[in-house]
Image 1: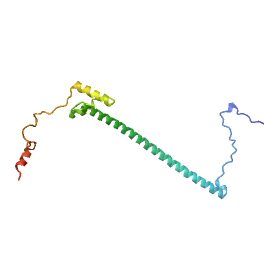
Image 2 (image 1 turned 135 degrees about the horizontal axis):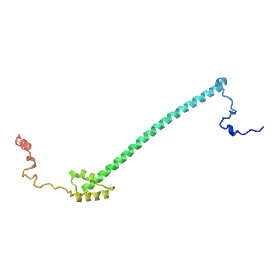
Image 3 (image 1 turned 180 degrees about the vertical axis):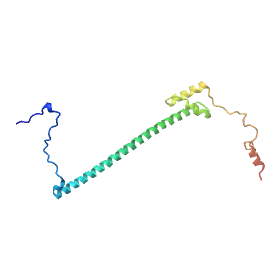
Image 4 (image 1 turned 90 degrees about the vertical axis):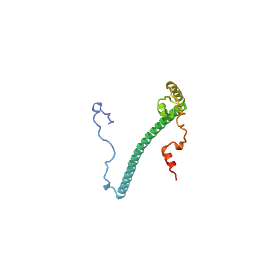
Length: 162
């Protein structure tokens, strides 16, 4: 009688196991040489599973370390770019003739994405707010005495020489 096709009405019922594999025997019923081979292969398989697990753990740790290093690199690059822009702003402010005592405040107000834009903004800002380099007062420090004898302690020590 030919094999019959499964009945669609009973499709949700699992078919009976018709495999042709013999049931597994315990290794104690096998000859000694076969038992030794099986034990050896099981031991070898266990060793390989252990090595695979260790390698997987190392790979996971290296992936985490790589991610951390990538994040640190990205942060360092961003910090470097920011520092370079700060330096460009300070150079533009100094080139515009801004006094050294206000150069950091002036540079913090400059805008632009490259050196030319920042330099143009520095010139515009300087002309807008009239920032100019201060010149020293020529009347200051011209007391007629030498620099060595202007301080009272210097005069005291000079007068008490032996």
